Length: 321
Image (cartoon, rainbow, N blue to C red; front, top):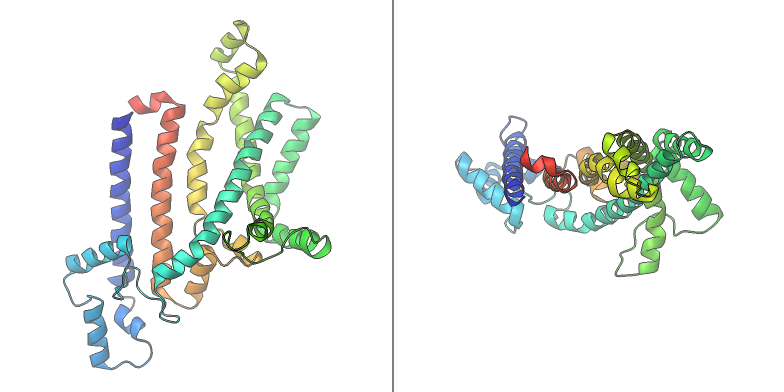
């Protein structure tokens, strides 16, 4: 098992290195514009451009530039190198801006992920156990509604009903957990539920299909023939095997939402990383876009590592493949 994890860890580091290299080439070496010119603003002089290029190490060889880029990407930058660098909007350090926005997105993803995993798997198991019953039809109808309903519509309707009409929640916006825990949960409960509904429906259908397929296997019939209770057959033997695909996609879904929960963040005015990325694209704020892109890519690579390890724990055959 340790050898398997070590191999996956080395491969993840290789993937991260390749992603950083490609990102560096795309953003700074393709003929799409001079980073120093973009950083300088309007009508810079030749002397100002030369000073900025020197300050950003753009006048050094490729490997030296890339070395600074990698160093500053992992350790941050206090000298303006655009590995993370400074935002064109207000000359704010990108690392500082990401640190400010990241908790909003991470709390949103964590809360929604817990909800959709628990309820999605529970609904899928219940639907599979009570196949073709009223419970099964209602559960799959709910799943179909969750997949079909647009997130922006669900968000606006939930705000209208539960905030404006019933006054049950704190509405839109974000309140830090350390500032007011009650307001924190009150403002995030609706975004959690709305974002979770889409994934909950997918996980419910996936769990149902996998569990039904697993319950038809020979070893399940053998377990029943040995006199095990139905609960033991389902949860001890059937569910573990059917959760393997869930363990594969769950970390990846979480990672992809690092910069991908744009609609939810916009509807509920959370202004997290997704909102930051889209706003930076519109304002052509290259360093900020770069920071969010790299952060998202690294999160996906690390999530893939976690998925591989979980997969190996659930299915021992993977370690010896």
